[in-house]
Length: 308
Image 1 (cartoon, helix red, strand yellow):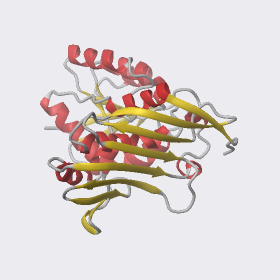
Image 2 (cartoon, helix red, strand yellow):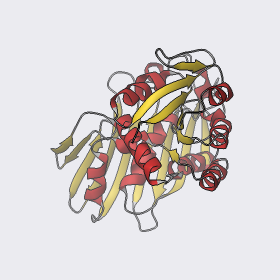
Image 3 (cartoon, rainbow, N blue to C red):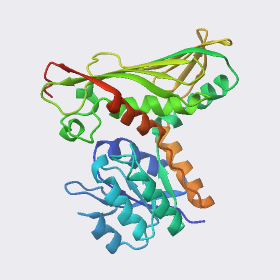
Image 4 (tube, helix red, strand yellow):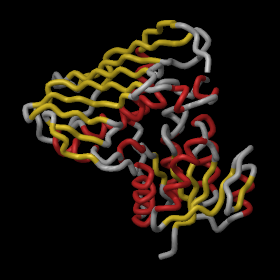
């Protein structure tokens, strides 16, 4: 079978840091084109718009959408209309209601739609899921704190409506939590800290429950400097586990049981190729639903202005 010929829409930081290197490493896929308003990728065909790319290269098999979330629905619909499989960078859309019609359209066309959550492909996540599957869980604590100036330098869109603010990284934590806990959780409380000059929060404190007495707390903050914190801790009848480094390291009662190099986007593209080969889609919106609920229940607190 020949490689899945993939085009990228949106040539920004996440495309250059993650998608393009993974597409060069993973067998069975290949990057053949890109579209961007103001950037190009060497060695492949480049186009200014997705329409020009779809018209100019009908041989493309699939499109990976690496744009800000506000335009993903329109881009995904255009690619599906053209008969292309679609991979959605997280979050899969700017709203929940726009995603279901895309999934239905992909099914109607017999195409694969893959809503990716890259943190679920961190190397220790599956081990944590297996450990918790038959455990009695006492409580879960999530601490996700990082420096926005380092990870999103000069990216004004992330502070605009639909940009998610601190939930851009926070949704990664929620994607792991929803993957490793054996029961679904729901939001019970939310406090959101908004800089006085921004439309999206810079920090959030969340509380969840699962209907069986489990309590899950989460703290997201974009103001941390120095070492970054991406930890999920759970107390269980089998021991205390800590999933750290964004899901790369699993510790049980202080002993490291899983620690492997990060290869999240390699995993995404391997899985995408499998979904296409099997004629399946995968569109889980539960992490985005939790973010939407956080805004619905959110108590707004204004904090000092943020300047990049």
